[in-house]
Length: 190
Image 1 (cartoon, rainbow, N blue to C red):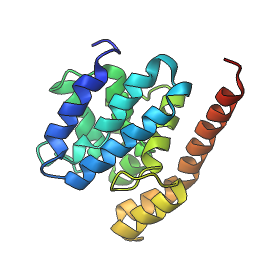
Image 2 (cartoon, rainbow, N blue to C red; image 1 turned 30 degrees about the vertical axis):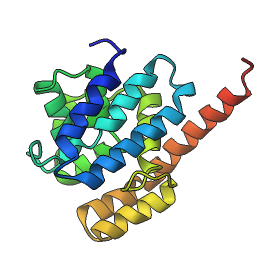
Image 3 (cartoon, helix red, strand yellow; image 1 turned 90 degrees about the vertical axis):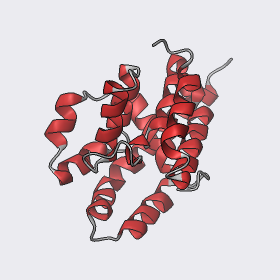
């Protein structure tokens, strides 16, 4: 699959998996894709790929796909094995938002990393930025509030609560790197 046409393919796929069973998750994915469009200037030829990965990043929560209970792995496997997705999108979904840390907590890190090599660090940062700057309802937020919301929703002592607190420094670092790249891009003459 070429980079062009990725969004035309990704949106209906994500909608078919999330809109009815998980409408709030679908709104979140739409918001994450909207954030991806706002940083297109630093993504170059990967802008459409990033938007497609953004709208698809949480499809592993779909009841039809949830096999391991670890949504990055479930979503990536579906995209690879069933949807025939672009391999780079599959890797972005598999590793979005510090997924390796959650995989480690679940005893799935080796499985995740052996099946799905990590994608370009700039793109990994960009997807984390988009996800962690979007509320569950798809509205813009900031990563500190987003981490607090996730920890509050799942509980501080839950696996997710502990993972998100452990991941917080890297989430903030991803955001800082993206904002730095945006600032540099804005200073560049046209």
